[in-house]
Image: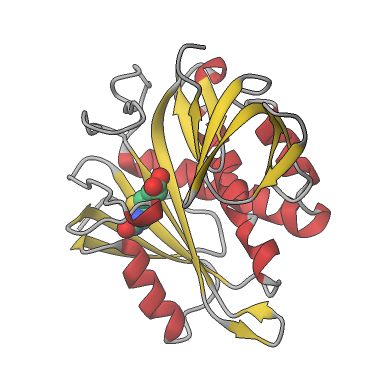
Length: 253
Ligand code: BTN
């Protein structure tokens, strides 16, 4: 169907012309016993999913892929894989763009010149003992096009002038960077991932609003915790670690 790809060892690629969602496909495969490194890649999604129940508009020309991973760790540690993927994506973009243009927005969006170019959706199984049985890590990259009507401004690699960035080259670069960062994470934990993420964090030290399901918090984005939580210095005083929420620059700043 598609040209042969140069993939790092340890990955088995399943190519599809279209699916509803590569995360759903990967999940079914994981539940059926698919091994670590199974990757579902589709040219188009009919029901792509984003975080917080949003849809992910998925026309042909962009990258849609989901990995089956079996990290044999407890859920909180498995969740760190979304930061691993974000750092790997950022590094993959360096191959096509000026690295200074690439940034990370908490929790795991990757930005180019301040606009979102990629999103990550991590889903995991129930427990087997204390550990998750599998993790599905889905990633969408706007290679050729981006939606205009998003809450946070979006962009694409093409719109940012990325050189030689096709879906195929992007998938290869991402898998290579992910394999290397995943190995580091296994051997050294989150610390090197956290440092790499922080070195390109967008809005560090700036006033932000964090939207939680039932409240909004206002303060300054002061750090990334050792476990990947966002550390917020609250406007009214005090400090809070946030492990899930949506971040916005505070209006008027
Ligand atoms: C986000 O909201 O930022 C996460 C978006 C994740 C989109 C990707 S595209 C491939 C995979 N399949 C899906 O249905 N979603 C993820």
